[in-house]
Length: 486
Image (cartoon, rainbow, N blue to C red; front, side):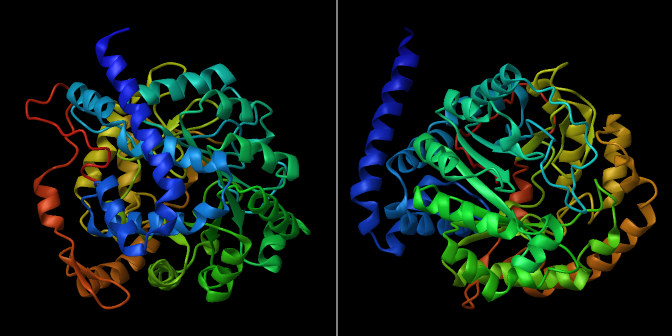
């Protein structure tokens, strides 16, 4: 065994043992202020708002620890904190030295596009239903990711639990932490017990609001299945959260105090918000929240984050947390069930397939380089998305990268719906640009809910050019921190 490998293993063992003991016997006794100090040591966000978001994660995690199973606590400390946050720096540095840009923080993998529900507006409804990603191929993708320092994977679909070998994938990759988006219909007492024993799986359950809204979209009786699944997970000490897609008809409901309080009571640790995008089953711009509704949700999510004991994030409104869009390999990519590698789950165009090229090759493609280059030019963090905020960019990078739609009818968002998407982006842009100026000083500051002014330093961020766009070995010294530049 090489000396460097031996040192890495010893370091890993020491870090994990130390964290596990501290997490079980010391952390639960610490106050929130001390947890924030520890959080700031563990993460290296350069976005001040992102640092605060990470602080929320750790403060709320401390509150949840006493209610989690032994294996779940171990999975959090070993995989999420140790492997993902602390021990992956050397592997990430090697990737940077070779390619000249940062590897993604995580992948989204959809093992199957099959689903046991038929929800209107489903973003993935028109994908082929054949699962081309075998058990072996999924593990190969994950293994390559680990070599880049990636130990966090989101599993989507379709309904992931339809795959009979899904649990085996989690078992085989015990050093990774998995977030899984699910409709929860296949989570019963036995499945919750399995997840509790595994300890490295974090389910996010899709909801549309309360019973009326959820059953209206997902089928009568589904809401009760959601509540039942959450009870099973809570009783077995599994960490879990909710996932809500905002439409014109539930936008206000899903950010109401009543909604948040209800799901906190069910045991949710986290809640993700998505904006309906007109793709998939019967695309309908009329389902999108209006620009005014989206702006309302932006403010409410920020308020919830600072006033409720739950971690919340909005992928279309929280660009301030991450310096903009996450797609194109900057923070993540999506591998669909046919192997197509997409910039994100909702930008459903691929130029390459994982069966034909390695992920490293794909990340270096013209398609993904074009996306990352365009991200550099976007200064308003309230307009992060190339699909609905800058649809002309989506059309441009698809053409430049030779990408094709990955599900039937997927090209409609850049063809038939082109004019409507442009109109939406222009209308929301007026609101977002004004808010960026008045509330954020054009990237110089932001205010917390209690009125504290926090410097953003966006100009300094851009001067550092955090992700070089050209491949090849970097001459300057690179840094090995996992979140450097985010």
